[in-house]
Length: 298
Image (cartoon, rainbow, N blue to C red; front, side):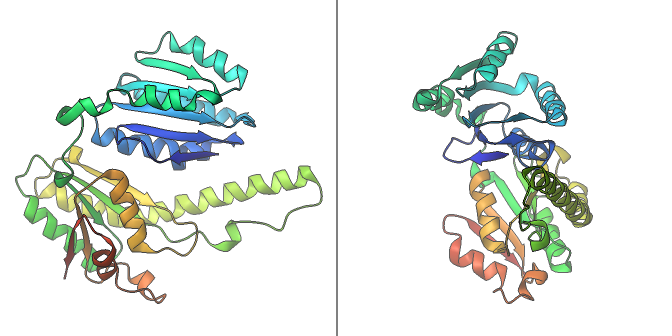
């Protein structure tokens, strides 16, 4: 399992690796997080904390790791690995000598030293690495006319601008309870198999939800590009709440992580959620989104 660690500067990505790392961990956590960071910054730094009870990496996940590493080989600025697992320490040391960036391995009792090293000098990167948050616009997109109307409005405002980044965000439905847990099994082997099958079911459900969402995201992206926004300045992302989603909270979470200045939603956006008894997302954002410019397009 891979979890994103908070508390790092925007150009430093922190991750915790626990239990066993799977291909799905790369597809749903590591690869999207790194891809989004590299869409905003020329280079990023990586910090990995490895749980002492770490059980290894699935073969398919090793292939994903290789693809990710080679794809962005010259865009890593610094890599820190914190672990007491000896085989990981030795493997990382062996590969660090051929990496085109600074790379160090630390013991678990050197966490503070590792964080200090991986963030050292990061604030000195200034405007060459960090984009002014006022020039970053996050648009919540769903399958509704008001949502696409909001995108069209933004496209007109940004027409001719070359200094703006736009991210299109879709908040996925919460994962159905049937895919979240099972009642357990008497035998460890059976429980492990059922747990693996459950992860596969979750992955299939998520991929289906993303494919359906891409219809709206692709339409929104086309609107922006046709208005003159560079394709390189438009990115897409997903929020995946485990339980019943608070859409405004999910949007704000992404906005804070991306460090953008402007949030945009349609007046009647996320009708699926509103039918469940939630308040209007735009109103919710205005109440909770202190520090952001909130555009609610009617």
